[in-house]
Length: 265
Image 1 (spheres, rainbow, N blue to C red):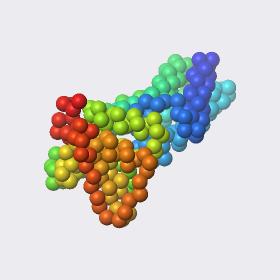
Image 2 (image 1 turned 90 degrees about the horizontal axis):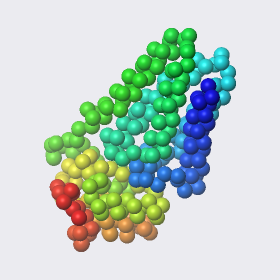
Image 3 (image 1 turned 60 degrees about the vertical axis):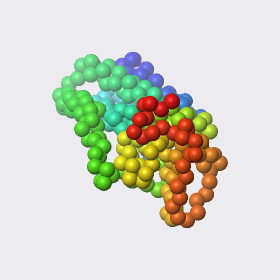
């Protein structure tokens, strides 16, 4: 169990460092994927980090009590499909990976491999392991079939929620520059949405370029396009008056056409 305890301690250490970094606004992962995961999940990354701390602490402690090893069977069997769901969300929805999440998933996979090689007498545990592996594979690839953007422009599949929503494309250099500025200036409270999910909504509203920021409140909606206009709106943050207003960047070079994003320089 030495290797098992080592990787449990490693997972606990990584989770603790990540937790402290998030609390102090100095996350250890500054990649775009980490930023997107933190911004697009309802309560950010902190709940997942706390769950990781509890999970790895429990594994480490239980490894010293042979009579309680059956609990490890079930914890690992449940953790693997959960990680599969989280990685599937990143792979098929965000299309960017959080390096911390991938590292944690890797540690759990190693723990799973180490533990199944230890002789067991609990046949039910093997059934759970089989279920776990099958569920993980299913959850990783189910996103391919579940996520199909709407093709009918008169039936948009997406509408913005209240708050700030940034619509971007990974192929748009202005979008990437804007996300980098948001990250460097520690601007929070923004929901990130991929262009392919919101393209029909933009077309219906006559918006032809990305990035697009939609700042929606109870009695007002502000829509801005172009890297410069959006960043000026976010830093410093602006207040909205009642009603709906639209602001397009006069300089078209600050955005990319939603129909030819890959040709944008």
